[in-house]
Amino acid sequence: MIYTGAGPGGAKALADAFEKRFPGIAVTAHGGFSNVLDIEIDQQLKDNKVTADFVQFQTIQDYHRWDKRGAAHAFQARGFDQVFAAMKDKNGAWVAVNAIPPLLWL
Image 1: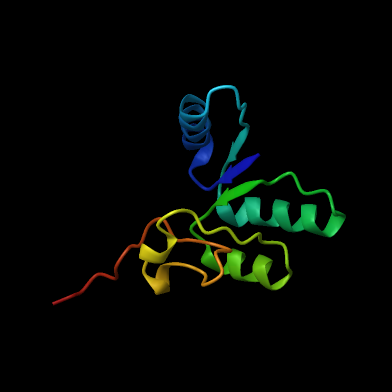
Image 2: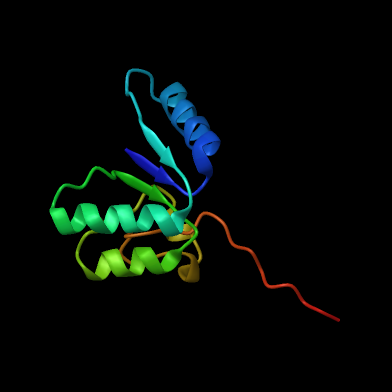
């Protein structure tokens, strides 16, 4: 199960893209607001009934919290060493896939 803050349409597109890239592997994706879905995942952790396999949120604090609980699995894909240190957990518990620089007001 993929959880994404991309909303229902983004979740479907993500699942469809994954299934196209990896035929034969069915994927379910749940999309919505990350500040709602993170509470759902927290409850899954509390109940010890986790259905989330992959999470894509913009709320990086969730990843830190889950990693401290021991709920995040470290994974370093090929090229992990090429990702800027500030954009990843050193052990591979999370990787930022997007960064929005602050606006500079002149």
